[in-house]
Structure formats: structure tokens, C-alpha cells
Image 1 (tube, helix red, strand yellow):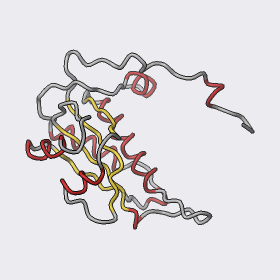
Image 2 (tube, helix red, strand yellow; image 1 turned 90 degrees about the vertical axis):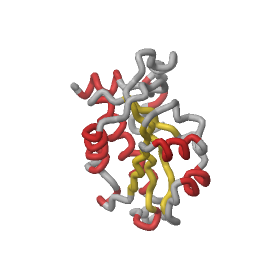
Image 3 (cartoon, helix red, strand yellow; image 1 turned 180 degrees about the vertical axis):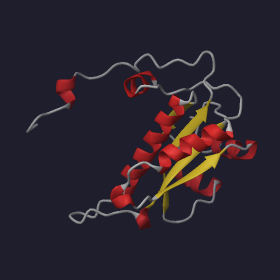
Length: 172
């Protein structure tokens, strides 16, 4: 798919078919995340692929925003491996995890797999449900599956603020 069409047509899918996501599709999505840029190429992301009935049931205890998806990827970042900005100690790893998630979300759409980036989850519940090691921070949840026939973007999907409200040249 052409990039312009890809970024304009992708939307957050909240209605999925029950079909399992093909292994080849999962591998393609993960490969896109694997090549995403990270601060100093440290690659602090850790991705937990959830697709068994048991894992998806545990996921449903951590968020109401699973939308019945048959697959999910929990993107975490390892705070201890993160590049740190020397001026204030800010970590690059949360941003790195977001970039990785964006790459995977776009790759999914490109191959016909729907996704929804979910931030509405309980990190402590996620940590407990999936035995996430200390130092790894759950950052984003990408629920995945083949879009149901009734899957459509939310009514506000194509609404954007005027460019001059969000872009400034030289000064604010």
C-alpha cells in the first residue's frame, strides 16, 4: 500500500472477527517493530504476544478495551536499558516503545490486520497477570485481529485541528 493511503486509511478497529491471526501476519507485524528506530539503537522494547484463550482471558481482567480481539501484543520498555538524556535524565525507552508500536500498527493495517492501540489498562494487573519482570514497564497494548464486517472508524476519526494550531515555524 502506498504510504499516504496507509496513514490515511488506518483506523482503530474495535470490532474483530473471531479468527486467529495467521502466524505469518504476526511475524510480519513483529518484524516491523523490530526495525523501528530507538534511542542510540539500544532497543529497550520487550513485546509479549498474547494469543491463547488463557492469555486473552487474563488480558480481559486487565482492561475493558480488548474489543474481543483474538490476539494482542503488550509492548513494554526496559527502563534499565534506556538511553538517558544527559540534561535531565529523561528516558528514551517510553518513546522507543511508542515508535515500535506505531510501526507494528501500520504494518498490521498494510497486511489487512486490524489493530487498536490501547492505553486504558491497569499496569499493575498486567504485571501480575503476565509475570512481567521488575524494570519492564507496560507501555502500550496493541489488540489485533481481522476486522469484522461492521468495523468502521469512530465518527471523529478524520477530524483534525487546523495545521496552524499544531505547527509553528521558528517560535510559538
